[in-house]
Image (cartoon, rainbow, N blue to C red):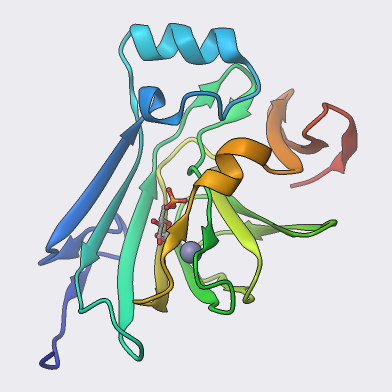
Length: 191
Ligand code: M6P
Ligand code: ZN
């Protein structure tokens, strides 16, 4: 791998050039939102884009670092904010760093019976320790964008989240976000 420099637009999260991208719509996230009926209606209606990931690929080997940006659009499925699928790393002992670029978001994390949520905005540097599952979401009216850096051989384990879900959700109550237990019980107002 040769050294390289990319242009990162701090306002939009656009990375140029990028060599791969992911676009996830509501229909790509079946079963992940609490309100299944709202999810089905959105998916069979306009099926909006929930988030996009732009990445400059490097070899998937120990020592390499992936740099990617994520743009989560503003929106709700029922009362739950647009969010990423969320994942553990297949190599559980690898961590990740996020840097908030624009918009307002949350980072949800959990490991075993511990859960955490971190508010994110422009300039927030958030650390995902090894072993913790992580999911981000947009609680604002504008796109929430952030840079992520993680070991290229970390791998994404989505299956565990698809089966077990996250222990906490972030929903809109009135005009702002509230963190609730996945069962629906409030843990206290935030933001
Ligand atoms: C961040 C990083 C990426 C991840 C993306 C979307 O940019 O953690 O590795 O792919 O968010 O999250 P997910 O893979 O959970 O859909
Ligand atoms: Zn990750």
